[in-house]
Image (spheres, rainbow, N blue to C red):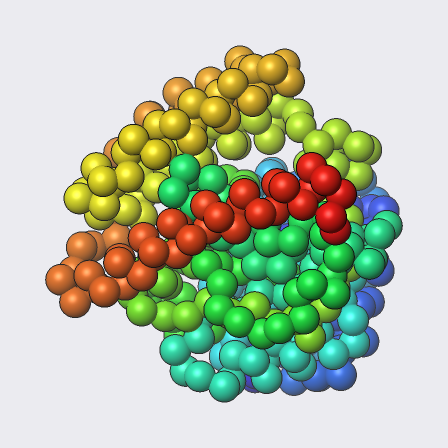
Length: 332
């Protein structure tokens, strides 16, 4: 089988059916679909059960919310496909979405992940995500969020793919490990892409693989809440775990001044918005989680890859500044 599509679901009654139907309508039909329900208490669980008996469809039911990482890991372990595509329950794929992702990945066996062009559901002329990146301040950012999608029509390498709509080569997942369940939600996709880069694999962005996305529907975004306690906790914890885990010791020490400045700005940012307490709660959780992390083994042969990552983070400072200027002046 060429591909396995994994959709994690938590209380997605408003959008899960349309998300599933968009996958079954793909031009590429050599795939299986696995839905992981994470303890839903709304009608979405019955919606997911309604497809049982359909060819190449599997439903895995968790009794509680295990988090994004644990949910998709269950799907990956059950996957039969050569590639695994992750797809959010609040995303809706164009008919050739999977075909385009596979075409891109098959161009080079060193390609680990392929990022989609995710469009804002209610403003489809604007990008939601065109690949993720990390800068020297330790900030993980979405490329193109809120800017015109027409700006992102060129296939290119990226730091990492957004796990909301991305394709992964399963043989590389078998090599580097699955999604780190210490992250629970957010930045787990950046972590796994970073691990791939450290071993010399490539992450690429495919502008022809298009889907629309209701950003943050499961965690409150659909109700207009860009920030909430849950997101603040995840940010406070995962923004510490990400660089600590993926940077070798010397690289971590070299970047520590920039990381401290970046994290300090985030503390101030969340405090000013009334979420200082949950953010600092997340930071406290991070220090407790350090000992549980499995840091990738430092290898001399990977030194060129570490230099490449460092160079990308340096360039991404300017990429972030350019983005903020465009948003500030409305230059979409």
